Image 1 (tube, rainbow, N blue to C red):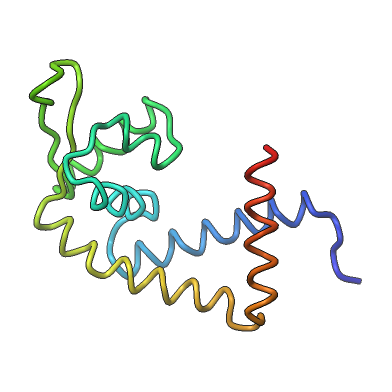
Image 2: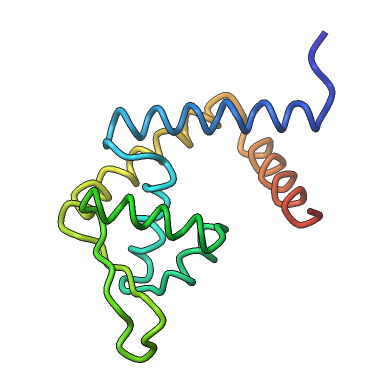
Length: 138
């Protein structure tokens, strides 16, 4: 019989999906999936504040600090003090980060296609609606 427990299925699918995506991003572009997401977020707002980056990634201050410190050590980003607020820091993608970022979009599109390949457009719409509903009610 097929598993019917939604909480169990969501938890298991999230864990497996994150492990799979992390494995793929590490193998294909040499960074973690969180770092790839961070590059995508920064790319949308080059020179964004750490706070904005944290909001975009849904990470708290300490997690963002650790993430950006690792990314800076790996020369993916550069952090600079904000010119208008001495307490704030802005984040910029380096040339190395941009080279990696060029491969992230196509890779994510391929993974997204793989996730939805056996579903109709209508079924994918229902899945998207369900997942957004889960996010909205929690």
